[in-house]
Length: 364
Image (cartoon, rainbow, N blue to C red; front, side, top):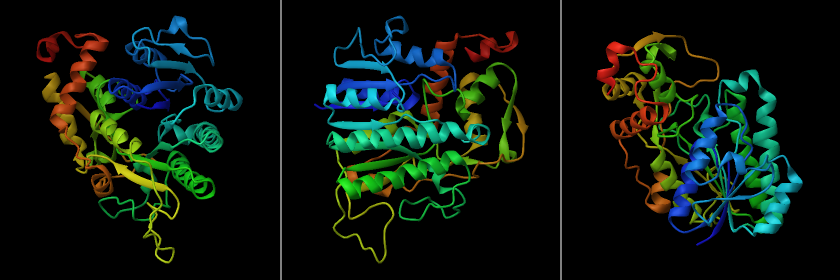
């Protein structure tokens, strides 16, 4: 049993991680700035699942869950440095999982400053708190997008990832470099997890599965970029959370075999590690859409478009380092995962809403 801070706790991954930590008996404090990058009501709905209600929230003040005494939440931005420091003073965290970030590759093209403020300045404040309050392990979200122009498949943490093609990706690579610096200078165990296209119930509205499902149910065209020639290593949320828990429980240690003449970028002489966290099996977007069609009973109207700036054609995770560390084995198939998401979507947004009358029976 540990006391753990989860940043981004009202986000997709953070919400599921909080539930998993509470279920196994940990004491959890969650923070989130509840920004409006996407529908804030979805974030509040996630919080309600954990016993945190909007009417009870006071900015920068902890609110206790009404359903689980081991959970507290505060609406707090990572750039509110003094309040963040006081939270570390008051709560005495042992471990930190930093999932707070400005997400989205395409949004970084139009609003780059948001990524510097949230993903770099905010992360610096987390690192400083971990430094001064002797945190036993900092686990933080990186991204498969750091591989950028890399074409060698599968993506390996042992290969250099120094050619990002979006500011979002650059900010995540910067997080890894910042974490290594603090591990080297101050001995803070840090582990970065490069997430690969996470999907599942309560997911983000800007992600592919959510967008495709919504469009299909509303009888609208599904925008598919790169003329359908995209492949993604879709990873179900339960597998992601399982990997995070395994890593949280295994603080990074110095690699005694690390060779500065032939440096492995995923390890170090400092207590620093980076892992891919994916399924290890890329799926063509057309096959992914077929699973949504099968679960909704509705044929998609596909709109094929050119690839967008900042997008990569394929992601494919080499997950050997996670398997070696803690026996990580993704368990959820695409068919099972998409089915669970569609079931949740119909329950949450209302079965039949925006579905053409002739197709309602098929969707049921």
